[in-house]
Amino acid sequence: MEIPASAATVVGKRTLFSDEQNDYRESFRRFLEKEVVPEYPQWEKNHLVPKSLYAKCAEYGFLAMEVPEEFGGPGVDDWRFNVVLAEESVWAGVSDAMAGPLLHSDVVLPYVMASADDEQKQRWLPGIASGEKVLAVAMTEPGTGSDLAAIATRGKRDGDGWVINGAKTFITNGINADLVVVAVRTSDDPHGGLSLFVVEEGMEGFDRGKQIEKLGQHASDTAELFFNDCYVPQENMLGEEGSGFLQLVSRLVPERLVLSVSSMAGCEAALAWTIDYAMERKAFGRPIGKFQHSRFTLAELRTEVEIGRCFIDRCIERHMEGTCSVEEAAMAKWWTTELLGKVTDAGVQLHGGYGYTTEYAIGKAWVDARVGRIYAGTNEIMKELIGKTMGL
Image (cartoon, rainbow, N blue to C red; front, top):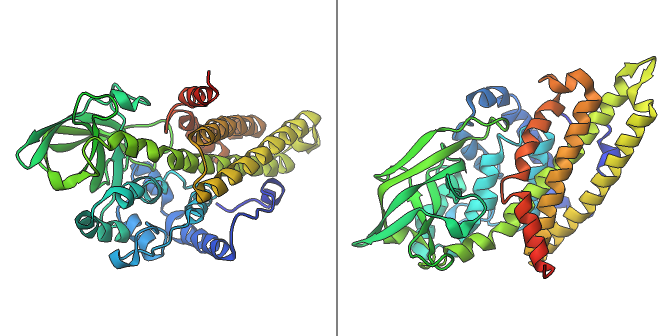
């Protein structure tokens, strides 16, 4: 799906990226057009992308860029490259297909980079860099959503390892994953009792449930994972025992920011598609965009999108500097996902009956947008976090 000509009126000039990132953007755009967009309809029907997509992304330099060269990766530690990947995936209309590779690189890999010891890095990073070993992270449980302290999956010592029992749900990459970073309770301390383990494909007692049928984002595989007396050796513990809560919390800022980045790109794309349609579709002898109601609606959305873009780009800069706070990430996640719902809903309305069909991208964008207000911490939790930082 090409970026509409009207995009220039929606996405203003940005100073965030260097020439290197701009060239990277063009390369990734061509990659999507050649390797992803033609295959996307079938992947969407399958509710699953092939694992070969990860290897192909790695081959072209679009996977696990943070992995050092000694382990087979590019060794590039610049989060703006991840921003480019997220934005272009949205503009191409294939963000759900690319959700797995992006989660692999931007959400899960940093756990390994920050906490794996030298032996674990030698063991895991080459496969992560090549796309041979697909990553996932398992926090959410059937009875536990945004409350990490309520995680009930239990690990008990057994000789030189641990036996894990429990279940996780809504796990992105749950079907494709070879290495799953699992949050496990190793003591009764609500926060200090959580530890992280890397559970590997083929470990006895590790089973996947059937793929979860979602309302939208069909090309992204989501599954339940089960651990029934699953034995995990001590050498698969990621970081120190009891450090899991701090590790998880430390990754919430970038996880929420990358969702904000995708949501902001979604706002811009949906608005551009709607402007194009409003200028082409005629009613009563003139384009519907010429009617005052349509013009005012689009003007209001254009203003809100521009405000959101300025804030998100500032958050990206602050994250690059290491100064983006939990509060700012919560604000970004809450604001952009709510705005995406508003923009796509208005887009569907202005498209009329066609907005409720699969013929136009706006309908899919509207359905896919809804979950943004739920995952990575519900927007109600985001408001709680913001309120607490205000002393309320």
